[in-house]
Image 1: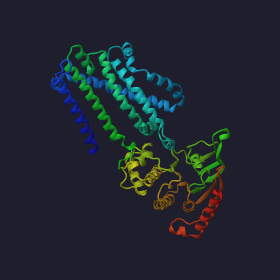
Image 2: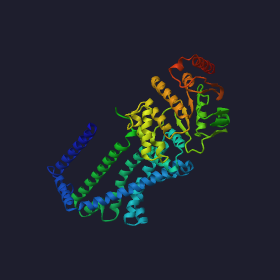
Image 3: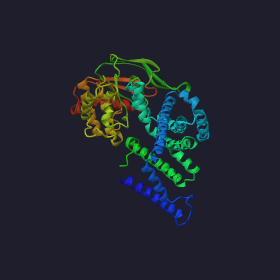
Image 4: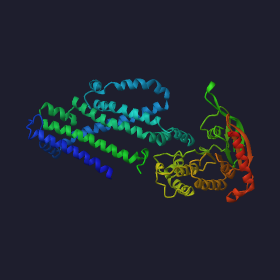
Length: 255
Length: 248
């Protein structure tokens, strides 16, 4: 427990300092509210939106897109990595091109995705997917390739079917690697979701930001940015929790 | 019965070729306990891996007369190869889970095996929480879980402390007599080989080949008395002399 309370204290300490500085600049220092609204005004705006139920649909929309993109990206990333792992000739030909494609910034092809997939939900999911896919793929491939060769012997001895082999040995053994990919992918997914909402649609935290900017509602813009930051923190915390619970076997014991 | 015919294994190609095992013929009858000893590089592990079909032979073949069983062979590796994400009990149950044995039946079997190998109280531990010896005991229990007629063991006790090793030796001897399994045990210890085996195969290195085979004429069950038996002591000293000649 001790190990958990400490980071919480550190984080809240840092947060407190940040809010205090914000309050000082916006209040006593006299920064105009259209440039920097006070913490209190942003807080009360967020609180009103929570109470009136105006915030939830936007938050839910963003979260939903992130989840779909993350899940689809993870499934495809893991499956392709497994195909590469199982068929070395495939990876000989395709791994190079894939890495080259990966170096192209996805953000740059975002408009292209809009042109290809329209202004609706599909384009958003595709963009998030494209950001999640590669880190998960890379993590999974590393995970599959670092499986203890003796576990392959075990699978042979047990005469496991392909499915059994995948589900009972290869997948769990590669899970630590896959999870590294998912953690990177989750951050990317958040970026992708917000970006997609900037570009089109009238839902989501990203949309709230563009709407607030266009209408000079600076408190709303700050509120949306804060919510996005909290969403990122929450995702991080949830993933850490999952890791601590299900992947403890892969880390050496502290005792 | 295990029928080994002109079995050989060569690694690498061209100039880098290494002969791990020269053609070897041997018939091992059902219910025999064969100890295999020899210095490093004599091909004893290779022989075991070939019998288990973990590797393909360069020539010759191994025939296991086990009537089309899905898993005729239980294998215990030099260091326990456990699934690190599964508890001891789940690891032992793994062969049963993957062959569709009902959970309740499997749990009973696991309970029995846990007691047999002395891991009671550690069923829920993860492999990383156990000592090397305990992990190895879990691996032995797993190899026995779906009751294979043939048990192959590749230096299974080398990571275990001496006292545990002697206990496990006696346990293994008891299991062998009780179940009538065919057991092949690769070991570095001449005492272990003579104490457990009904036959001892001595192999010599570079290239790996079978040097000589001893029938062990010691009464069953083996125990402390066996270790004082002059016949046992003679066999041990003979084996040791042989091993010395090969390594010098």
